Image: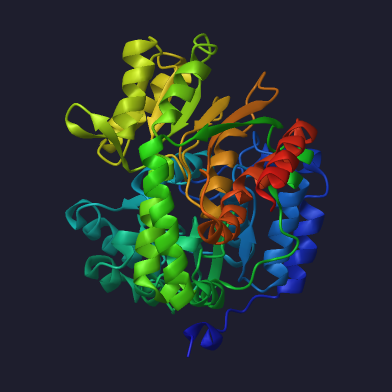
Length: 489
């Protein structure tokens, strides 16, 4: 049984909601009051430079209405971090919240949360990497909280640190008035992570643009059972653009054909996928089918003609900057050294052949290197970043103006994150541009084609999703209708 149900925090949620609505009904009154207050370092406060948007205030109120539990499904870049810190601030002011615990899937998100927390007057403990860097400080600060020698404590950690014994040994010392925030919370639905979430913490908030886990209903249910259901109304990417929380964008699909050898391999894989589907169409419990789909996905992701399309595109964009290039994690054939990662080939074309100033941003980069690359891109010293997956979630470079997607999985979570990464507002940034390379299937025999049509519908989902709310939606829709007719979808 979830210990949450046994926690009895003395919170009058109705009174809290009423007070909150009065407090934020007039920003000018709020700012005037703040100017006479003196804040102790480490105590949460909303900076005067930040004005909560109406949908953020609604999210705060709805989470209170749900009695301190819930999942905020808000578009990437719409201000989930700010909303969470606003909730923590209000809880401190009303019930004297003692601890804010933030869980992040990646190390670079820990540093990004640290930057945002400091804007809110907080000095977080960064509990990740070696326990020798943080465990002693965490134990001391939790003791100070229990003894009321310190009013508030902020801790930011990674999911991988959460499951380790060093952190788990401290969980029992977290006070009742603790708020746990799961950032990019869909990661926390895996069995090992979900079982490690502290049950003695009753105030829970999950943040994600895509809380539903791909092909994992059980994990999604476990996640929502712990944090609470998705709080209505959801704030979609279309909502964010309409509210000017994100900038509008132009979407240009670039259709790419397979080479003759790639088409032969593609047809064979598709035929085998059809056989596997005939035996068991349950992807989750069909390892053979999963393996075949991954092989074909990587073939599509690293299609050789994408490099030709990239050269042609970038020759027209050599003066642009603030560009992200998303690559696949497969390999290219027909290279001198047998195989070469696509990211290396793309970097070679951009940097060596075209003189476009780029650097790679991968898991192999240290945190210090990633931060340096981020700053170089912001300043314009670099024109672009070439990445595999590290830029999918969380990294905040609002100057980004365009993205070139050379490869993307069928997981809707990934392309939703990637699109939102490019749409963050920035001074003088009127719109963003997304170039999306989509591999079209080769001619197949009739039997194989019946399988392919069903699979193609799923693979074109990104195309439809990206296009329907783009500024040039009519143009994109015409291309889609042409494909529908061509492939009789």
